Image (tube, rainbow, N blue to C red; front, side, top):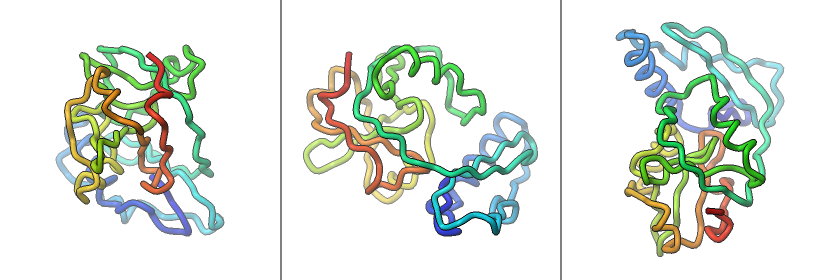
Length: 192
């Protein structure tokens, strides 16, 4: 989650909902944890932008803060991986990192079962005329994506690689990337 000027930049409820849903589904913990109560921003953080990483199982194990810089992404490589399971935000991202390391593009755009899903670190949205479409079945239902769906900025749609010529731009989004700052890439820079 993004911490900026000593505040959480995305409503905390989205992070809390995902954390408690994961705890319920993966660890069979029906009781809800209050993320707002558990999260304390350290006094030593300056006014920069920080990533807050919360490691948990049935309970919160660790809360870490690290400075964050937006990663420049100008090109994407389309890859197919029908068996990658990342619908929970796992700590182990080695398979995603391996996909990125196997290309000379800045990041990968993962196709699963014939449909566009996500990049290695972000949900995606495509501009069609005056509306932004996001894959109906992403690898990870991200918190920023859900916030933008709830706000009516994004519309879910089943998107296939053959749909790419319909679009001029793809935008990368995650909790660390506010909509106006999220990378905007020309679809022409997606390699097949």
